Image (cartoon, rainbow, N blue to C red; front, side, top):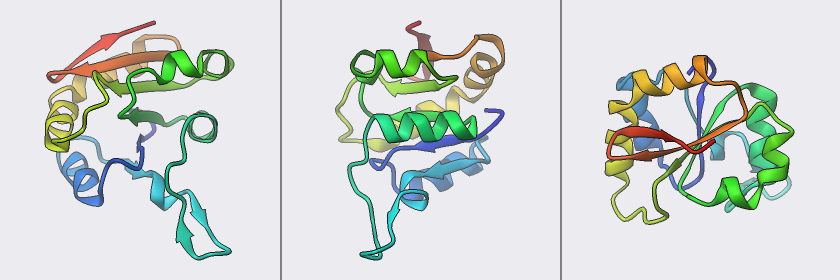
Length: 133
């Protein structure tokens, strides 16, 4: 993507490294940007509103393992320039499946980023991007 892929906290650093070497040089992880500095810990489970706003401010594409986020936060998303790519289902037993799909879909993701006016939400299914709206 023109900006970065912003990976929610279900993705590990090893996943981000695979994406970086597989055609997504700017794969950013949530834990590197959302930290509780008072407790010197990472914020866990940051969902929805803060992430959408953060990605909108940075012009980064959000990659999530939550297929219904676009429905739950529809009103907020419509006020942004967000690009959200969700896994086709919420089951992340094998994260390698999603990483392989993101690498395989790199060209398509880039095309969506450039071609479709934002905001948009899409789903990743078997290495293919399916636009939701």
